[in-house]
Image (cartoon, rainbow, N blue to C red; front, top):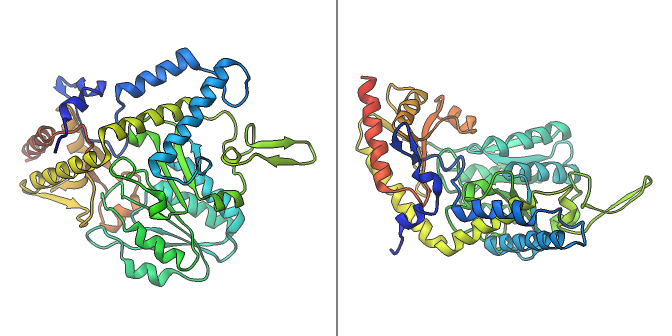
Length: 406
């Protein structure tokens, strides 16, 4: 495979950094990814050369930034293969996108004794908004269980679907276990009963090719900072038929058509869901990140990361006293594990002293930890700029942790 990881690493300035006099090994990519220089330069250029409010001015700066913003929307549309530009809504992130649907869809379609289904492996961002909605509406939240490998128990889902099921909200990839869920199968099951499906793509968008039309999901959400873009920007994709029906979840500028004290009418899609001055610099920089990924090659990235994951799992399994949580057949490059007799926080602190950044704790997925009866894990999440030598350094660090704690 023609994949020049050294060249790619040269595109990311932070990877040249040292931590505690060690070269940085950054293995916390599921939390946030690092940014290539092209994205950093784009943000600097926008603020220094093009900054102006979008959609509101007739002067040159406003027209230029508005054009760039709408080009960014088209870039997202192409990246996820949406049918049209106006099915792409810019939000603050995946969390903001889920909350938008939890409010708008919930206000329109959820009633007393209705049901929403999520899975036992969801991030808190795909649990709490639905809990809040169900409490407001007197509805029920039902949970698809997971097995000891961290896979969905699909037989349970078939039994859960009833005439009261109004929505399924499901992660495509678990942020704590790395499990890749069979979302196409689930969507087909749901659509057979006219149940819409929201897919949380926060952990899938950066690891493979996402095609919302092939998937046939009704809603799809992701965050820019998980795919080498800036913080504070995200995407809500929705099928046009749903977005037309749903009420806006925020009021303010840009989402209105006419405003009087007697009545307000709303703007057309996608602007109906983009109240106020949106994060236009974030949207444009996100498009820059997506273009960078396209040029690098999404299939190449997925193949490289798959090999990296296999290597990391193999190296960890060579160490005695390591238990990996999440052994699903279909996984991406996230490995959660514990070192026997050593608290994950203690291990993480020692690894940090050696310049190795991993995540410790519940990973905003406390129900997953409860399912496995543990307090948390060490999570190593890999990206396409990581290397086998960095995995070796983590393994050496773990051996040192074991020695220190006897």
